[in-house]
Each structure stands twice: as structure tokens, then as C-alpha cells.
Amino acid sequence: MSDISLMSRTEVGAGINVFLTDDVGGLTIDRARKLLTGIPHGAEKAIGSALKRATTTAEAYAARVIGREYVIKAGDFKSYTQSKKHYITSGGSTTVDIEFRGHHIPLYKFDTKVGSDGRVTARVKKGSSRKALDHAFGGRVGMRNHAGVFERETSKRLPIREFMGPSTPQMMSFNDDIQQEIGDKLREAFDARIDHEILAVLNGWRG
Image (cartoon, rainbow, N blue to C red; front, side, top):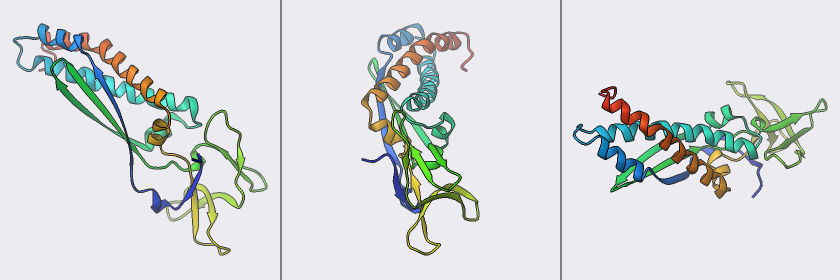
């Protein structure tokens, strides 16, 4: 599958999902429940707060990990990606699903150059060479002055189509190591946060 695709703006309306599922806590969650026995919903408050902080950390880390392989800024990752968090606790195991959804990112957000002669070259992945896009041109179009790289569909001035790169969920789904690394960061952040949240509940800071 090519990193660069050509499509109209209306063809990218459907989101693409990637689920990162991890069992977090285990013994840590069991310890939180024992320490907070007698405090109504105390363990749930501590675990929930720790998971919220951990998933926020994992999401930010995902942007940095993607940036190691793709020529995309962390800010653009966040702008074109939405995420939802799902927590399911059963016994001593808590499953965390982070659902990433996103549309294809305009090619100009990657490493795209328009020469003085109007020639467009681009690359999406680090380690790949910039490719020339014949018949493409860079510019701003529409009432919102949308910037991008386009190609005319016919010999006439309009209609035009925009060159797009992959979506952030696609970047993640293509690499199992990336998903595993983000999952590891999720567990690490949870373990680092849970003691603070247990103390907060014991001190009445999570009323």
C-alpha cells in the first residue's frame, strides 16, 4: 500500500479505528483495593484517576512514537486524531482500550516541498526519499482558503482532488511494535501514578 494517496475531500469521511488493549495493574489494583477497604468507592476513585492520567500519557507518547517513523508533527497528530478510553475491571484485571479514530492527513502536513518551478515533491516516512508528484500543484482553494497539494481531474481548471497521506490510526495499525510500545507506556504510567491516587483518597482529596 502506498503512503501517498489521491482522493477527494469527501472520500475520507469515515474514521479508522485502532484499539490498544492492555491488562494493567494486576497486583497493583489488588493492593489499592485492600488499602482503601472501608472507604466507599475509594478503590474505584483511585484506579479511575490513575487510569485517566495513564491514558493521557499514552496518547501523548503515541504522537512521539509515530514521529519517529513518519514525518509528521506531534501537533498535527493530535489535530487529526480523536481518542476514546474504555475501562473494564473484572477480578484483579483491568482492561484499558484506547480507541484512536482519525481521517487521512493532507499530504502537505508531511515533508512536502513546492519548488520555484512549481514542481511538488513529498515523502511520508522517515528513511524514504522524497518523490516527485507529476501534474500536482500546491495552493489554497475554497472559501476557507484550504492549503494543500492537488491535481486536476480533467484538462479543465476544476474539479480538483487532494493528495492525502495515511491517517494516524493507519500508521499505528501498520506496526505492531508501535502498539506494544504504547501499551507498555500505559502500564508504566499507571504504576507510577496509582500510589499518588491511593494517598489522595486516604487524605480525602478525591471526595
